[in-house]
Length: 280
Image 1 (cartoon, helix red, strand yellow):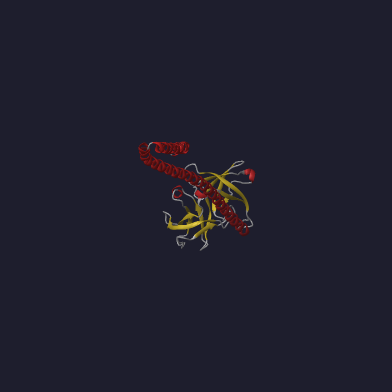
Image 2 (spheres, rainbow, N blue to C red; image 1 turned 90 degrees about the horizontal axis):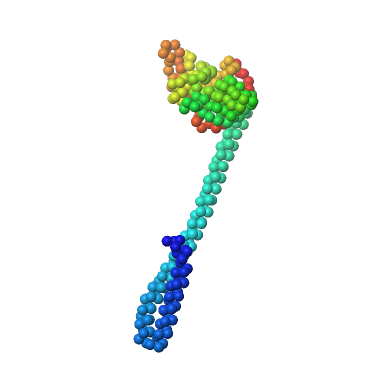
């Protein structure tokens, strides 16, 4: 309907005006010669003129509505474009803010651990079995990455250990992987044990700190880091926090369940420690 009036409204208005003029002329002509006929024509023309005026007024209001509607539609389109542009700018600003924050944390880590030689890498894939047991990196032996290298975040949180290496790729066994085994230490007490992943625990998002004395005195919330004993892996990397403790089936040693500090599902970039100072 709106399109019909926009395309044909002018013709309708012209026709209405011409009809009004014709009736007026006829009325005047006949009215000057034959009063009764002129009176009849005037009588008939009066409501017609009123109707024509009403139609003309309605047509004018329709044109005004159409004009304002199209103007508002154009303004709405421009506003939508502006909102989309502002959303893009906001996303870019958020990304840059996170990137700056990540770089600041990395600089802080470099200041704390000047012995580390890093290699940054992107994560190309997560574990194919639906578990957080492996990650695939975008770099490999051509970048100096080797089996046994530790993978960390920009804040020094342990992600895992390189298990396989190709020319331009590397597979990482995460802290939850059953293939993971390294020395761990509790910050509060200095007590050391062996950190290892297990299949059942992996599905719960946990790993074990084992071979502890029965009177270990550990509590939920205690922070666990890498011990660095044996010189295979760096010391002082954050692993996670203890959630609960227990003893093995034989009752000969204790253990603690550890929740990793790393969020494996949200990782996009990691850092490979290619060199470090050995602390005995």
